[in-house]
Length: 231
Image (cartoon, rainbow, N blue to C red; front, side, top):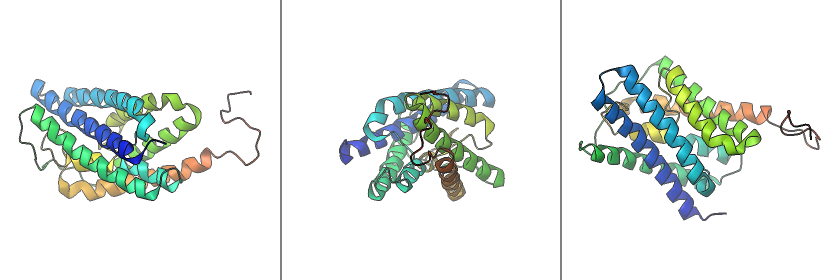
């Protein structure tokens, strides 16, 4: 197993680059167009693309969680030590904040900001629970059936979820916290964070429960893991 220090570095780096992409592409989109739909589309494409790249390249080092909710469910499954999951969450959050600061620096904006973008209410919270549920479900099913496809599956899922959820699918407590440090296209008011984070964790835990049951292979079963595989 790769040592903890390198895994933590990979998690911080990956989350930082993810947030830099989310925030930076949002700033660029706002600079180039006043069309909100086009700006969101630009933000979506950049985010989906960077997820494929980051998971593909950093996954072999740390698992490429980049998300405290994902680290939490892997810890509950016994696939990540509780101590390590806590450290993952810490460096993911710090990396995300540094990513937002880096995006501001690239566009000559004040480095540290507080977002004023209101994102609250039942529909937003439900959207975040759905977003996190889908993300965790896709990860578990992908690992079981198409491990090599997980980077693409996650990137495509988030690309779609940007558009079918009212919240634009943060699905990630570390990213939500980091986005509260930018008063740009991608921001969220710090006041709105608790509702988002609770919804994300709840969605992830529901996905954990469902997928644990759904993907369970009976002990001693001769059935193939992939039901389409006749071997």
